[in-house]
Structures are given as structure tokens and as C-alpha cells.
Length: 320
Image (cartoon, rainbow, N blue to C red; front, side, top):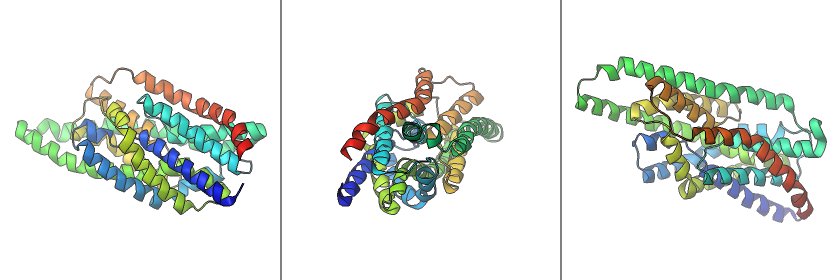
């Protein structure tokens, strides 16, 4: 197929998948759940940070996903299969209002086509296991750190407040800090998630800077058009005020920024939900009903993305 047509096809699907990622992004959930910012303010911020994060931080993770996970040659059909199968699963999860991992969707699709083309030897299992270590460790850290941070804030600050005005002033101060932390998280999240999804195009020679800019813009559009459902869903997992939202956001912000800087694909969704559960435990507060639906979708992400990729490869390869 003509090179120009291939470029157009991949640009279109990069837009589609980045839109799907944005539709499933829950980064600003704690800000919404704690009523720190209104939805319109959230949408303005996320648009700016999505483009900046994807372009400035996306290269390292893109190269990990695009070059290090498969032991087979990445051709046009294979790359397009991974993009489409990842996007389909993200859209399905967004419609259900469930935050899932773009990382896990992408890696599941990569494993599916790798196994289909070259069997067990088609996938770089050492690299997958290396990333898997961080996928397991990061939510655990998020849970523990959120628990500890909330306890410290409660003991050293909240418990010493005197009256409603004192409480209101303190929460207002925490709201400023929370917005700053969220901006760092959103910046890192865009860099990690956008590059997770479109990194596979590195293997076929498309200009990475171009794709990352397109991905950042599409990512923000996904949040604006469809992302509100997931933001509201995660923000309601447990009751939040700015100080408690800050406690749940600190580990996610730090781990995601460091991981993105080091080129490690991570799941912001899993970290944030684990952090909110740690917060609920520390506060002895109830969590949202139906949380097991989220966990079930998480478990299904790897096999469903892989199965989608396996079924889609043959027709895509035929047309490409």
C-alpha cells in the first residue's frame, strides 16, 4: 500500500486510540470528588496538560513499548491491530464507566499478536515480567502511602483544628496543593498513557513527535467528550475533601512521574484506585458499591485485549 496512505491510516487510528484513552482517564477524579474544581475548569486544565505531557514526556515509554516487547518484526498490519484492539477495549470499559489500564490493554494486544505470529517466542517475556513487577508494586505502594499520609495529616493537622472556620481555611489551603499535585499527575499520565498506546508505531518508522502531539490533542478530546463518566465514577469511590484527596493523590503523582521519566509503562488507574482504597481504610469509611465490577474488568483486560488482537489481525493484514 502507498506510504502516504499508510501514514494517513495510522494518524487516524492514533487519533482514535488517544481519544479512547482520554475517555477512560480518571486523573482528575479526586479534584472532582472533593469539589475542588468544577468540571469545566478540569476540562481546560486537562487539555493543556495532555498535549504537553504527551509531547515532552512520551518518548521514553513509547520506545519501550515500540521496540522492546516483541521478538517479531513490527509491520503495518501488526501495529494497526494493536492500536485497534486496544482502542476497542478502552471504549467498552469507558461505556461501562470503569477505569482500566491503557498499559495493560496495549500489552495484552501485543502479547496476542506476538503469540499468534511466532508462538511463545514472539514475546519478550523478560521485559513483560520486569514491567509486571512494577504493575504489582505500584498499587501496593499507593495503598500504603495513602494510608500513612492521611493518618499523618489527620494527627498533625486535622485533629488540632478549632471550629468550622479553621477547618474551612485548612481545606482551602489543601485544595491549592491538590490542584498542583493533580497537574503533575495529569502531565505524567498523558506522557505515559499516550506513548503506551501509540508507541508501537516506533517500530514502523512514523515520526514519533508528530504522533505524540496528535495523541495529546486527541487524549484531551476523549476526556471532554466521554471522560466525565469515569471521572465521576472514581471520584465517588469514597467521600473526599481536599486534604483526604491530597493524601490519595501523592503516591500516584510521584510514582507516575518517576516511572514515565524512566520509560516504565505504568497503570495510573490502578494506582489511583488502590490509593483511594488505602484512604478509605485509613478513614474507616465505606467504599462505593460495585467496586468488584472494576476489579473484574481489570482481570479481563489482558485476555480480552489479546483475543481482540488475535481475531482482528487476519482481516487487517488482508486489507493492508
